[in-house]
Length: 314
Image (cartoon, rainbow, N blue to C red):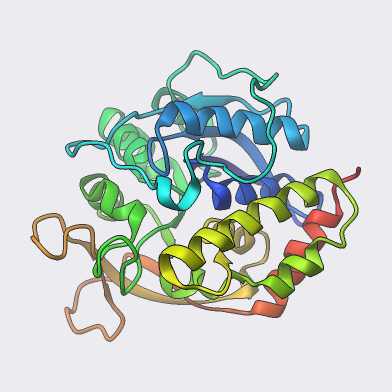
């Protein structure tokens, strides 16, 4: 295996966030999870934190600190996506009511700042929810900005899923996204253009159900619920596991085709708030600031996913 990559997973679990954690912690992964931080997004931050702790319990991730972060966006009122992820944020599988793993007392933003400042510039941030924690950390301690190796995020796209123009994660806190996208930190962006290609259809779910361990069983139940809500809300034939794309890229970049482009974030438009303006043709003449994922090798992606789940023991 190649040299370990140090990462902080900043998330709002969330079915696909949970799956991203599971992929990152698997034995096929080359990632060293330094911390898991939570943010308000799919559901309230308190529920997201509980879900992160429960996922850690399920996969035996004992030594990684989990810190709770921002409970609302920088400016807007809090928004959630209960219709997609259910009341708990992880509806579907049976989960322990009270996790054995405990959240640390330190705020997520403080933990991010501490970890990055103490690093040798080798920590990658992997936000798979709204970018509130990352923006707050940059604002509170600008010294972290040049020390962040890369930000590999799920969000945005050339179209939306929460409004016609905006994807949910960016729409929830576009002001935070603007701070991050304009920070100068190297960014790899996995938006709807590519994450909708990571579609867990019934055939894929049935194949994964053949894997004989408890973690795979848990993921299958997550995917079944996710596929059901995506059929009801968006008429999709499967659930796109958006957030797992970030981790898959860090494990095997060859899965994705990337374009170096300029991406701006709209914060003022009545119809376009939260839109990521992806300059694929270079018409603005602005310096590229994002490596934008455009294509996914489905065979490679699901092969990695299958090997990751198989690597867990019963």
